[in-house]
Image (cartoon, one colour):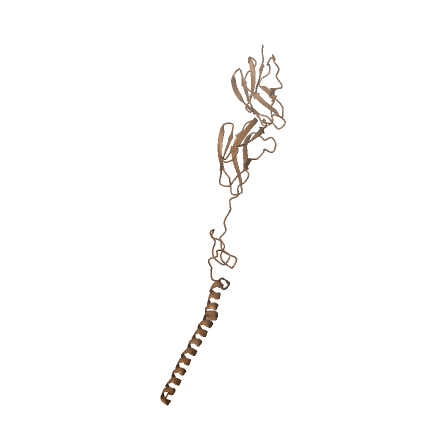
Length: 252
């Protein structure tokens, strides 16, 4: 049979045990609340930091520069890159026949490539510009000129240029007021003749150069021969343009 003192002690023990149990329950509830709310909110904030401007590890979709230096769509500074695009390699066809002299051969290719252009055994190197075009200067004589171009990375390209002969329109060289076998009586003697407009004509008598005359716009020239020509054997006119000549024998 329990005494009053023992009953009192047992009551106190039950109260202590109950308190400890309640405190344990309260701690567990707090821990569950902390994990579910406070720690969960912190994790959520960290997981969506990119929405507040902080860079993530996902690359250029959330603010971080990509491997080429360009940034994302959220306000970063973009770094522009010039892409070198391969162009079709070719040599341009000539636009009809060309005049003799300076001619520029041109074509297309990949920017930065070196093009070797060959014509009449002469090589000219050209570099393809940023716009994908190249050009090479040549000097062509009359006739057909085959031109090839190669960059070492594509098949060579070839075209043919038709180079016109110099303009030969106009009067031909001649002495018009002196005929073969004529006898010279008067002195001084004035020779008259024809040549292409603007052409210089050299006059000689018996192999001795007397001087030069220039044809006018109508292709006419004249030259006064000083001294006695009654004993001359021949007069000769030489074109200084194409080296043509005409000889008149006199005083047989």
